Image (cartoon, rainbow, N blue to C red; front, side, top):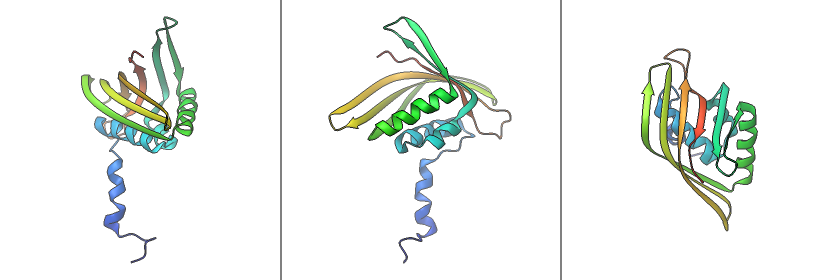
Length: 150
């Protein structure tokens, strides 16, 4: 057997990391995979061209937000700086919408290891708005609001 030409069954094992982005759970599976693999291309495929990220800066008492390009730059910087990232999605607190637009709020646990002695653990909640033009199209994240309190 040639180790550089694996059997078809062997090559299919990696595909379990990828979700079907035409399903809501597939979006979250791909989001997790993008973070764990630190894959900016996969992460970018999740975001709509009108994407907005927002969070509350409690120290300053203001809401902060930015668009898709700034988010992609920030995420790429995070992926480069981190040695290891683990993301676990938890319970869905709220979910409503239809086949073209859906809002989901769910908990998460994020661990980012910058070095063996610099590990950050974040537990929080995020609310997402997902949209698509037609039911057979993949979902894209239009809005992501991080509702975590650090």
